[in-house]
Image (cartoon, rainbow, N blue to C red; front, side, top):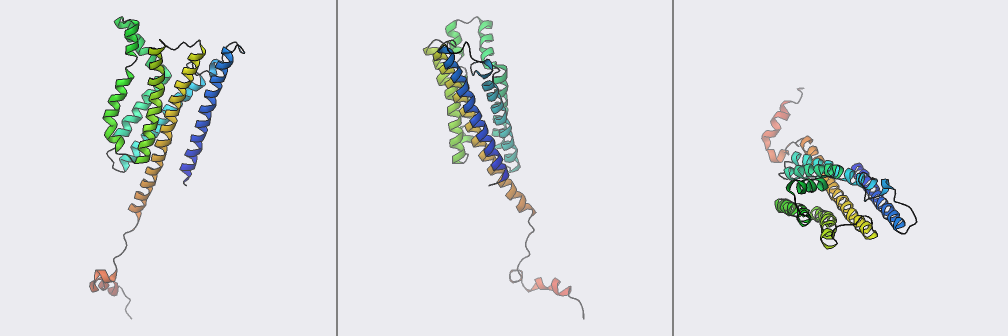
Length: 256
C-alpha cells in the first residue's frame, strides 16, 4: 500500500468519525431540549442552524470533493482519457454546491423568485421541487460517462448520489408536501433535519471514498506510464538482428 493510500485512508476515517460524532451531539441536545432538560440547544453544535459545526463540515466536505474531482480530471487528462472533461464539470459543480451550502443559495433563490413573481404558498412548494428535474437532467447527461467507469467506482458513485438525493428529495421536499413543511420547533422536525443532514453527509463521504480510490488507481497508472517512458529500449538480440549486427561491435575491438 502506498503512502498516499495510507494518508487518504486515515483522513477518510477521521472525517467519518467526526461527521458521526457531530450528528450525534446535535441530535442528543435536541432530545434533551424537547425533554425539558436543557433550555435550548447550543447553536454551534446544532445541525438545524446555519454556520454551525455540522454546516461547516458539509461545506468543507463538498469543497474537498471538488478538489479531489479536479485532481482526477488532471490525471485523466495526463492519461489522454476523454473522460477528463466530465470530471472537470463535476469538480466545478461540487465547488458551486460548497458555495451554495455556505451562502444558503438553495433557500434564498426560491424565496426571492417567489416574492418577485408574487407566487402563492402552493406555487412556492412546487418551486422547491426544482432540484429534481436538474438532478434528472444531470443523470441523463452523465449516464454514459457513469456506466463507462470501472464497476466498483460506478457502484460507489451511484450509492453516493442515492444517499445525497435521499437527504434532499425524500426527506426535505416530501416532508414539505406531506407535513406542510418542517416545524423546526418540534421534536419531529429535529428528527427530520437530523435524517436529512445525515444522508447528505453520508453521500458526500461515500463520494470521497469512491473518488479517492479511483484517484489512487490513476496515480499508479501514471507512475507506470512514467516509468515505461523512462525505461531504455533494450538492444536487439544478435540472433534476431542477424550476423551484420556484429560488424559495429567487431570494428570497435582494439587492434593488437
